Length: 110
Image (tube, rainbow, N blue to C red; front, top):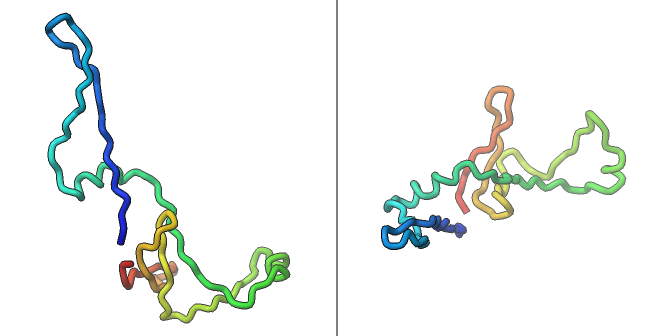
């Protein structure tokens, strides 16, 4: 699996005692683990995508769609489907019911 890792470098002007000149000094963050560093960005939004194949679907089917239309899929109940985040495949999932809700269980990481 590939991850895109990036680092932010913060620079701030610092006043020196000699002549009160401005210098730029890069802030040195305390050493952290990879997980701690990534946790700083846990607020970034991600687009989660599940791809569900539909067989024999035509433009005519699309034009006839309305509220209440049921679209059959080509997926069997135990078939694994790809799960992507921001267009990058990250795992394979299977659907299951939890009470009244449809859920996706990760079966394998990509």
